Length: 106
Image (cartoon, rainbow, N blue to C red):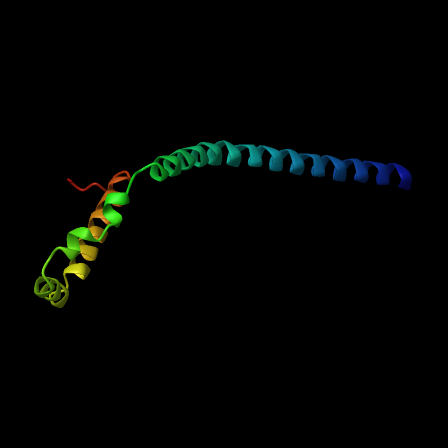
């Protein structure tokens, strides 16, 4: 009798492990089905961004052509910080535009 009960318990444990493994496999498939398209879109975006030519922005020729007094005044009034705040605000607004139901009339 003990051998029959042990066999039934072993079968139950095996069946429970089978259900757990099946659930884990399905879960991994669902996660991969979600992550794969996101990965491909981001890989495509990285490829696009790598092909953008930014060599014109890397030269300091436009700033060096300004007189030293003007550069000094721009530094004193915080022009660089102002542009950073405006750029951050624009990026935050664009980021909020991507979230549904947050557009709030804009």
